[in-house]
Structure formats: structure tokens, C-alpha cells
Length: 83
Image 1 (cartoon, rainbow, N blue to C red):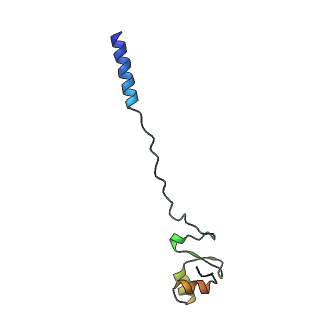
Image 2: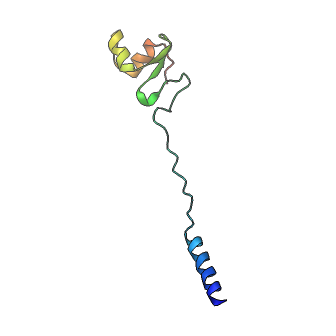
Image 3: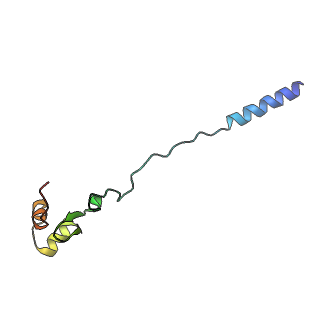
């Protein structure tokens, strides 16, 4: 009887000691998931241009269209409201 009790106790101790806790992984923000109302990815440098009707990188558009590489020049060219 004593051996049965000891083996049962040992069995319970071993299996209750082996339980694992579920650890939640920290929620991370996916890169490129920061889209604006026009689906432009701002972390990649894109902004909406009303003239071209697409997402543009201001420095690339400034070079192609030969205007100053500034926020105000981009907004003026793209007819975007000042922010």
C-alpha cells in the first residue's frame, strides 16, 4: 500500500511539474503596414499626389519635374492642401 501511495505521489509530482505556460508573443507592427487614406506607404517615403493621382516619393518627383525638394514645393505641385 505504501509503495502504491509513493508511486502515485511521484507520478503526480512529475506530471504537474512538467506543465508549460503559454507565453504570448509580443505583437509587432509589420513594416509597410502604415498606409494612409490613399494606400500610400509613408514609411517607404510615399505621399499622395492629386495631380498624378498616385503615391509618389517627393524627392523622385521633384527631380523628374524639376521643382525644389521641399514639402511645400511638393504640396504646391501636387495641389495638396498644406498640412
